[in-house]
Amino acid sequence: MSDERIIIFDTTLRDGEQSPGASLNTREKLEIARQLTLLKVDIIEAGFPIASPGDFEAVQEIAREVEGPTIAGLARCLKKDIDRAAAAVDPAARKRIHLFLATSEIHRKFKLKKAQKEILKQAVEMVEYAKQFCDDIEFSPEDASRTEGDFLVEIIEATIAAGATTVNIPDTVGYALPGPFGETIARLVSDVPNIDQAVISVHCHNDLGLAVANSLAGVVNGARQVECTINGIGERAGNASLEEIVMALKTRKDYYGLETKIETRRILTTSRMVSNLTGLFVQRNKAIVGQNAFAHEAGIHQDGILKERTTYEIMHPEDVGFSDTNLVLGKHSGRHAFRERLLKLGFEVSEEDLNSLFDAFKVLADKKKEIYDEDLIALIEEDFAHVDETFELVRMHTTSGIDVTPTATIKLQRIGTNEPIEDAAVGDGPVDAIYNTIDRITGVNCRLLDYQIRAITRGKDALGEVSLRVEHEGIEMHGRASSTDILEASARAYLNAIGKIVRQQNKEVGDSQGV
Ligand code: KIV
Ligand code: ZN
Image (tube, rainbow, N blue to C red; front, side, top):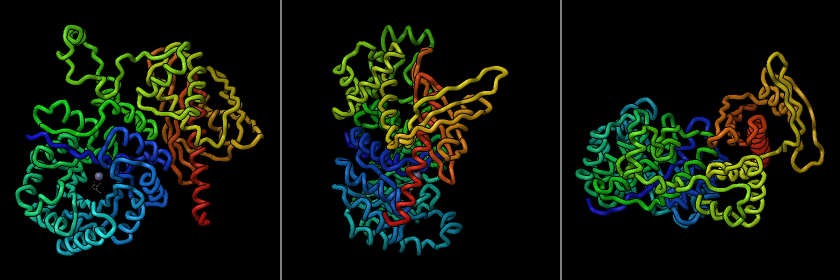
């Protein structure tokens, strides 16, 4: 194979955000989009603008603010969707409208109740319609992997003739297998007469754990764009994982002979950012970005590594952003070293942010002797999460033990006021008591849907990170916080989620009043 380039189409903010419970607000999406730009993805699918006013706003904001990658907006093959998507991506220097319409017999018969001919006509007309807004049009025959081969060839040829510049082949339900999926792509290359006028893309879901394998089979057979997400997040079992695709192409360039533009050293930071903001933890043994991805436990492996790294290591951990010296800073580290480390981790912060982060770092360094990269990332995400807070935790006292009733006494201050409010409550444990007290003070009674706690780094003095999900009046929200005190982290994660709920409620009132 020749040294060609694979286009990386990142859909973390669209398909990835469709992961159950992973919803992100505009500011969080913008932060991820900026990081994806540093990572050098070619295309950011920023959302599905018709889906909600929030989705529209996020796509438009990213189109306005983010320079470099092409910004894509998703649309069904309907004029109202295309109008919304076109308006949302309009501010981008490089923009794309991504149209989709289901083509498989199952979808035609049960979902759309339309014949092949009608689907074909609708797809062609809508590609032509979208073309007036921008040149860069992608068409996806949804459920392509279960679509009859002849019909797939026909609709791909027709949509290219109508102006589609990328034709994407989705394995929507993760049903495909590498062999047959590769053959589908090979057939398009050989049987679609105008295929040279478009880029073939693949978009694979992971229901059988084959999303990456299927995508790569597509690449071997002629696909030149891969749609993927950070950490493989997405609908159900997720999408093909960006880091696995990119590192497979890089590590096995001898076989694929293909390159991407991705700055692989930024992979880990991006993975952690997405995990923190979505609340979707990365499993320890996850390829490329899991905590154990480069950890050698067996003595025989460790011995081999010490003698010659390549005996058991096929990639350099540094190439994906695991730092060479993980132990980074301590109490006596200065501002300069602190800034340098942040830069190395991929965070460019303003002078003002650097001051507040450095103060927070000093407080942490007083509690914790050794500060690792993971601690610094948590510190930054923590600083970022403050923006969402409506209530500040001023004081907290808890009692718990065996044969005592757990209680919490908490003082909160609504941000922007000078009136602290104090209250107390009991619970069936200290965390329950904390949450009952916060509910009483804020008046926002949340149902706790999920609560997870983990140590960010090793050691008994490690930062504990609490990630939770709550529901209040139909709004589901994720909250997270870290602290060396896990009860404090529990309280602040809950306040973080409440802050986002209050913001969303205020926004909905504003939207309904046309503000
Ligand atoms: O999985 C799918 O079919 C999709 C399309 C919208 C491309 O996400
Ligand atoms: Zn999908």
